[in-house]
Image (tube, rainbow, N blue to C red):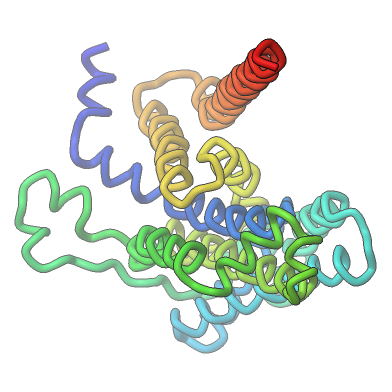
Length: 320
C-alpha cells in the first residue's frame, strides 16, 4: 500500500494525468459541440484513428510536424463532413453511420498504412515527426507545479485552452446561440430563420476537427508512431465523459480529468507488478461505474422534479 501511495501522490503522476487526459478532452469537447446541436457523434473513435494515421503519414512525407497536424485536422473535418452528409442529406441513422465509420476506420487505417508504407499494424518505417513540448518560463522553476504543468506537449495546452474558447463560442457568440437553439428545439429554430441542417453540419465538422486534434496527439505527442486501434476506446470514453459532465464545458473538462486519472493510474499500476488484466480493465471499469452513477443521479433528479410537479398540481387543485 505504501508503494501505491508513493507512486500516485507525486508530481510525476500529476504530469501523467494531464498527458493522458489530452486526447480524451479533445474528443469530449467534440462530443459536446455535436450534442449541443442535437446530434450524437458516435464516430469519434474512428475520426481519431483516421487523424492519427494522417498526422503520421503527412509529417513523414513533408518532414514537418505542423503539416502533419494540419493534415490530421483536415482528416477529422472530412470524416465529420462525411458523417454529416450521410445523416443530414441521405437521412441515415447517425448512430449506425457512426458505427460504420468506426468499423471502417479500424480496418481501413491498417490497410492504408500497408498501402502507403508497407507496414503491418505499426508505422515502423515512417520517420514521422513529433509535436514539441513547451516549457513555461517561471513556472518550470517552481517545485512540484513546474513538474506537473510545464513541459507538456503543445496540444495539451491547446486542449485546456479550447475549453475556454468553446465556452465563449457556445455561450457568447451568435453562432453558439444558433447551435444551442437547434439542439434544444429545431422546429422553433427553423421558424425564426435558422438553418437547422447548416448549423448541424457546422457542429459535426467542428466535432471532427476537435477529435482530429485528439488523434494527432495520440500519434504525434503521446507516442511517435501509428499503431492499429491505438485510440483504445478513448472516443467512447469521451462520450461517457461528456454525458457525465452534463453537456457543459466545465463538466466536460472535470470528467475528462477523472477518466485521465484512472488511465494514468492503470499505467502506474503496471510498474507495481499488478496483473495486467486488472490494470487494463481500470479505465473501462471507471467508465461503466461513472455512467451508472450518472444515470442513477439523473433518474433521481427527474423523479424529484416530477414529484414536485405533481405536488404543485395537487396544491393548485386544492386551492381551487
